[in-house]
Length: 313
Image (cartoon, rainbow, N blue to C red; front, side, top):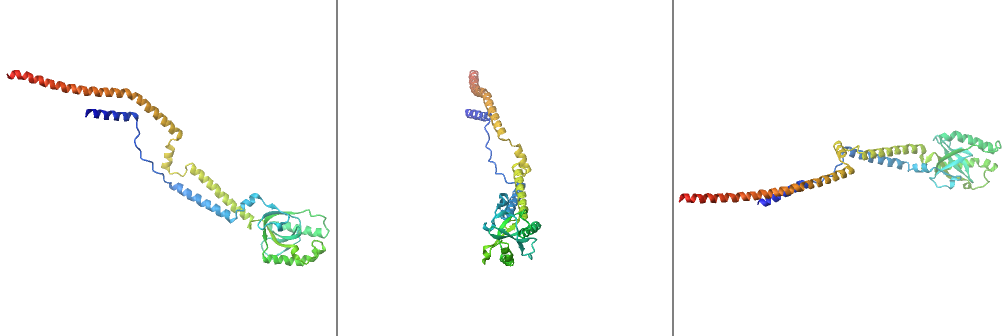
């Protein structure tokens, strides 16, 4: 019984010296804090708004980045193409009754005529070019030295505007034949086309509106980037958790702590070996002394009994 007790003491002593770690319960998964959850909701909402803004513009921002395509014969371009053109001559305007702060001009291109819709900012320049074109036709000028650079999207004239252009052509066909601008032909379709260049538009949307919506989308993207940086920096962590993360050692400190603990355990083990041997010897000596005392007690009792017997006699 005493030997088992001593062995148990030795095992407990060895466990204390070795510093065996106690069983620790597994860490519970951390929940997303309230501040972080709200930040994620804001980022998701802004991202959705950015996609909607770009979709409204038809993702025209990419067309603006690529820039317009230079074209000399716009009636041969695919409808919806973002193009740029130098306008040197204008033969006239039609559909003046259309109140949209612009003018529909008949512009010679190649072997035909194309309608160019000038916005308000180009109207004055278009009037100057029309006057110079008339002067050139009438022999008052020997060259067309002024022009205006426009860019926009090629579209198809609607039936109303197409009819007005045909009406204008019928009214001005005679003097154009006399000026050798066109030949005397009965097929008007050889010259006129239903292609129109809508100046300052991208994918059938006003270019300025595209810039505004794209700018708002860019601001939204900047906001998302800023929020992601704050999330990565732990700005939206709850205060107790943030303090815990700050107090938690990093990988370098953790590795250093493990090395120090191993060295300390090794040192304790080396120092504990003599103590263990000494404690074992002490335990054995205590056991032996206990046995001797028991034996001594029994002998004393026997001697007393023997000394009492002669007296009784």
